[in-house]
Amino acid sequence: MFPAALLFSTLAVLANALYLNESPEARSSQQVKRQSTTKYVVAHHIVGNTYPYTVDDWANDIELASSHGIDAFALNVGSLSWEFDRVADAYKAAQNSGTNFKLFFSFDMTALPCATAQDAAALVGHVTDYVSHPSQFKYDGLVFVSTFAGESCTFGQSSVVQGWQTQFVDKLTGSNSIYFVPSFFVDPGTFSTYNDVMNGAFNWNSGWPISLTTDTYISGIAAMSNDGHNRAYMAAVSPWFFTHYGPDTYNKNWIYLADWHLYPRRWQNLVSLRDSVDIVEIVTWNDYGESHYIGPIEGAQPMSEAWVNGFDHQGWLDMTPYFITAFKTGSYPTITKDKIYLWARPHPRNATASDPVGPPTSYQLDQDQLWAVVMTTASSTVTLSTSSTNSKTFSVNAGLSLLNIPLTPGGSMSGTVTRNGQTVASLSPTGYTFNPNPSSYNYNAFVAYST
Ligand SMILES: *[C@@H]1O[C@H](CO)[C@@H](O)[C@H](O)[C@H]1NC(C)=O
Image (cartoon, rainbow, N blue to C red):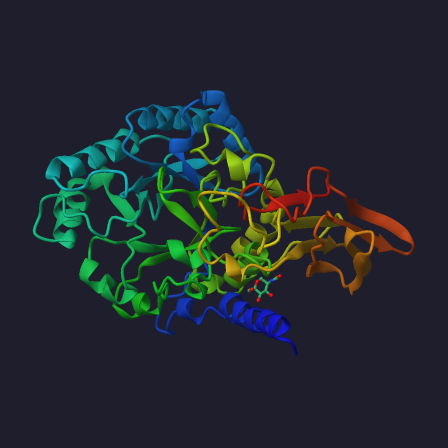
């Protein structure tokens, strides 16, 4: 076996192990099972990317998310005052939507100040504004509140725990009481020190096999179940990760491995672990800067146009209800329509571009492969093709199949599903070339699907 193939298969084994058997998430057997309680799927919505939104734009997002089985948006808010005007519009749109769609705050503690008691009072004020709103997401009858980070916030107190406890949680009592599920980036083994602060944990980094990068954060959650608290567990699922900002802007330029069909495989993983998972948060609806949006490209991008425009991801949204149904009910729905989904990056991983930002950290993990998902109502023949001379035919059973073939420099992507000599689904998207000579680095995915 030559080295490239060896590396390829080693990564495949690693990815298999990581995606399909995420033992860090398994809870101990003493843990109270929650399979009888209602499960929820929510999506992370970056309010910071909604500056031009009207109530109608919110209504469109809510209709689209709701019709795909998503229960709520986690409204990621930072420190810009206009963001709270958009939040008000979002709540208005949800209330008028004629759906049961809900909203809750996900305070972005990397953007919001948290050094003083007044900083906490501002958060308490935002929560209080919506406690009795009919579209407020509640869990166990309590107002649901989440965060991104916050593990360094003291709010002027002697410790992080004291800060969150005395200045935030304890200020929200009676009918204002909250169910607080932050994504503190700490060792889950320390959760017991957060005692009455955390009602649950949101494991943000569980969306990607990030240990295949130089990052050493351990996303394990097992310790949580052993500290005597029956906390809710909110898991992340994400389809992709690529961000490409130079030092002159946000200085973020890396990928997380998302090959090997990360999105459907992570969902399959969560379905198999559903007894231990209470809520799934899709990361994200609209984070264009990190390329993990599944909603439409709209609003105001955070200077991410170079790697986002032309790279619609709604194929991932389209396949989402299949997994949500399985997560919520324990059974995958019967497939009633043959469908094909294809995605790939726009240039070889080793391409060189005259791009001052340089290639993203960890780009070497990526494979030059076309990733395909087919949903078939019965046994079928699937043909994938990336050029007139590179195609492969597969026999698949009814259900969901994950397939891939190598990309061809200068080629494109297409796929067909046939049965009894008839084409039952086909896809040959325009607007995609696997370009060996890109003018800038782009490790985002072009996603297409048959309708
Ligand atoms: C990319 O470059 C690396 C290092 O030179 C090499 O090992 C690898 O085979 C190349 N990959 C592809 C897909 O060309």
